[in-house]
Length: 638
Image (cartoon, rainbow, N blue to C red; front, side):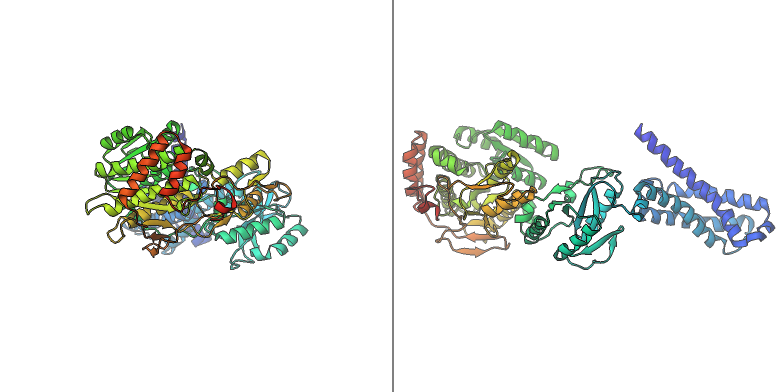
């Protein structure tokens, strides 16, 4: 039914244009000759008009004038009309000359006819779009219209698109009262009749002027993408000072499909306040690492593992094997990859990295060339209580995966590690440091054709399972106070997408021949963030005031928790890499045989679920691990 309507509308537009072509010739002749047009024989005028209409009918349809929609007529449509009219007249003139030598017609008629027909074809399209877009409303005072009065930040293309979208919506939720230009270059000008009042530094004056006109804005909407996080924090402070909330327009990748759908305003995400400038990535090298290879990801359903699967799938591996111990997580990521990359050969395997038999069967079947080991227990307080479980997953599981990589001929294994492995005060951090040591020892022991073992270390990922951001979001939704462990506690943060991009980038650097064996690739996490500042910003992003609308309570450090994290150990010397966002930490050498005996001993204790023995053995396996008073000032100061 819809296709028939579209075809019929195209035919109506086609008939309209042929009629206009027929009208254009006698109208042009009258404009040129005036009252003396009676000197031209009527039969000749009729013959010429019919001839021009036929030529137009032959030319217009193939020129693609009817693929567009009048509702969205644009400069491209005007260009197509210009081409079609020009071609029709270029054909008409010699045909008329051959048939009648055009003896009754002025020589200027073709040029006049060109302008007349352009107006007759383009004018109705412009008027129709003008009517649909309701731009006539912008010429009158709209201060009484419904909708939340808002100020836009950014006087660019995004602001123009949003204003245009709002103007098309009867009873729109927002009424745009002005624009702020962060650079000040367009102050005093207008975008679609909306004035650019000033810069963000002049917001107080702008607010006073708008308030006098009864247009005091209630919300600040950021239209420009890629603003510096410090500038975003400044905007948040400014908005709060003037009693406004802050929102943003979605990224282009977040727009819904469909021309007619409205642009949806979204809350400012905490990522916009904590992010860093985009890192320059060597994407061809990342594709070369993955493309055409068999890739296996453990912990494929977790926060990092699932994002690894998404980005790896886009790099066109020959096969992708998803391994996870959680049935639901495995189902979810397998379903998602199946929808986004239907042509990719993928296999979902429900297996625990602690189960050597299950993992051996998976490796024997998949024969992976590239392995990303993201499976881990990572929640500090839980692992602190269940040390044996942490040992079995983070140490024994990592050793099983690493050994199988060597036995089945994998080319590279990438271990996803954490900043908590540096000077660990928690059992989780100590177990991850032990896994780092084992992979470093294997990498240093390998020959030219052996599997490379690369460790990538980074800090917290925004929004990951068990992290502080989802906790704060739940507490805000519940209407209660936000809980912070300590006033001075800080953490490194990066987005999941950025972390995984840099993991892939680090993998390309770490597997090169110029990288020393056993090195740890450490991602640049930027400056650490105070959790108290994060809590205050999230409250303000919710349109509330810290300590007034929403309280913040300090509950004390949890077992194993530090005040601040570190990315490097004092004994690890740093070396730059080809990417400024990634640094190489040279290995702390451990005797492989001694390390393997220590791991055998602690894994045996873990099999017996002897948490006390595991904790004691961890202090020997990881000498810098301090476990005497987990969560207390002695341990947490590190």
